[in-house]
Amino acid sequence: MAENVQATTTMEKIVSLAKRRGFVFPSSDIYGGLNSCWDYGPLGVELKNNVKRAWWRSIVQFRDDMVGLDSSILMHPKVWEASGHVSGFTDPLVDCKQCRQRFRADHLEGDKCPECGGELTEARQFNLMFKTFLGPVEESAAVVYLRPETAQGIFVNFLNVLNSTRMKVPFGIAQIGKSFRNEITPGNFTFRTREFEQMEIEYFVRPGTDEEIYEQWIKDRYQWYIELGMNPERLRIRPHESDELAHYARACSDVEYYFPMGWSELEGIANRTDFDLRQHSEFSGNKLEYFDPSTNEHFVPYVIEPSAGADRATLAFLLDAYHEEPDKDEVRVVLRFHPALAPYKVAVLPLSKKEPLLGKAHEIWKSLRRHWLVDFDESKSIGRRYRRQDEIGTPYCVTVDFQSLEDNQVTIRDRDTMEQERISIDELEVYLREKLGF
Ligand SMILES: [Zn+2]
Image (cartoon, rainbow, N blue to C red; front, side, top):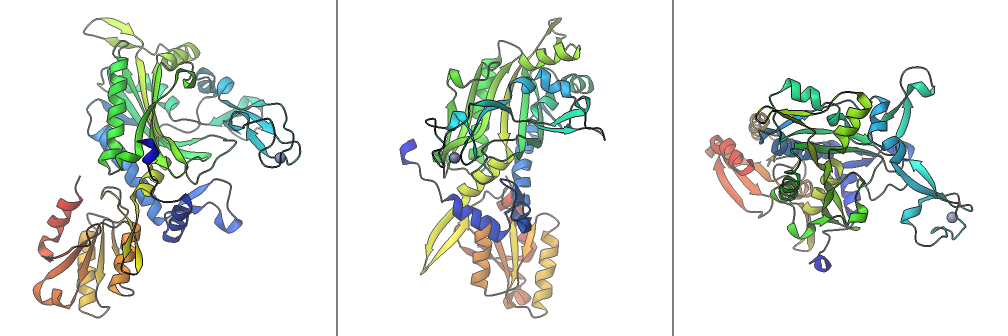
């Protein structure tokens, strides 16, 4: 199947649309940008928030075995000793002696610079954690790191959550938050960046049940993307080979999406065993255990970790939604977002800027905005306005015309079918609620 997969479009087209329509801008744009840093614009922040909301809803709101957390980005430096990041979170780095560019040694073929053919230095290990200082003194005792993953914030709160809730193993803790990795070679738009947002779950289970629960999480997480409209042909599960596994992981599988640069990781689901809780028990001196009252025994749970990238998921949903269709002599660009992800759910379009039609349209806009993010567009022809909404993925347009003043009805246009129907303004909210609900 993999050979026949087609990307929806090129990354260049998406980068251009994203900037033109306000999804994603280069960071510090007026200063020429900052390498691989990006800002989410007015539509991008809505899209990404909707992705995160859909994840939280499915993971925390819909499940009785999950709770949420929002831990701080700066953590005790010992956390990163216990987790293995201080000693082991490194990439092999080489420099070109001629053009001074830096590369990941494990990404190079051959022993020459891929840019200029120059000679390369010996590889040295480069730690990917961003280092800074806590407080006004720049000394080694004050060194802290920007977290390279949100997971550790969950592990160090294992006892706090256990003691403050009535959770029983198996249960999980979910967290969405920023992480930082000083990648040697970031790239592919928002796919690999040095500052990024994660959506992570640590799911604590009784040893022995871990394999079955790991398999279930892989299925559940794959299904989440499908339910939000992702094309199954561009989504696959890839189990890691044993030589790809981290030393503590018993198994790992990636949910991959077919990006324009090929199959790439959207999310990893790992069986981390009891590695993290044992490490933190040892380094902190606190016993990170679970007491099972039904069997009267203490044990250290195993952990299944589904770890997704909010930026990657947002990019994948954006790419997957992109469609170009012939439309008479032109091309219609339409983002076929699932309604839950679309930045605007509805656009209200008055046919004329004259009163009392404009006032009536404003009234409808105002009442719908209590429930959804609703755009209002009164400029240019109605055809042009439909195209503008198609291009940003708005599922429904509500057109208010002169007849609306007489019969209290409006025209609703469907983004995907382009079909139009006439309905009463009094039924508008119920109609949209039905169409937009999920
Ligand atoms: Zn070079």
